Amino acid sequence: MITINGEKMDIKEIALLDLIAQRGYLIDLIALELNGRIIPRERFEGLVLKEGDSAEIVCFVGGG
Image (cartoon, rainbow, N blue to C red; front, side, top):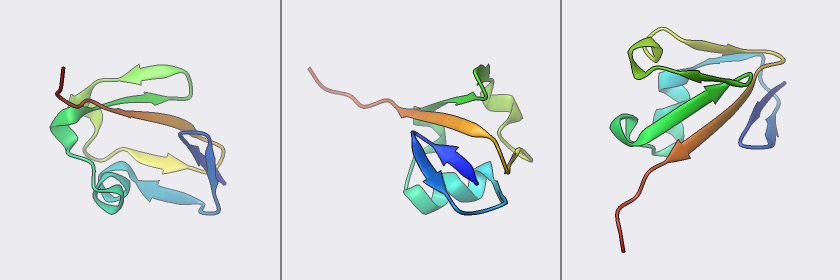
């Protein structure tokens, strides 16, 4: 099980880029915290979330 933004997902692993695409996020407008650590955008490609991981994905939006 992987936890994304507090929601438990019953999957063993998923590529971060696949998860981002599934959720409709724009890669240039997100920040990722994985298991309590901020992950630099350069490391997104090839990153696989695995069972027991906990991630927070924050999307930036414009507005006033």
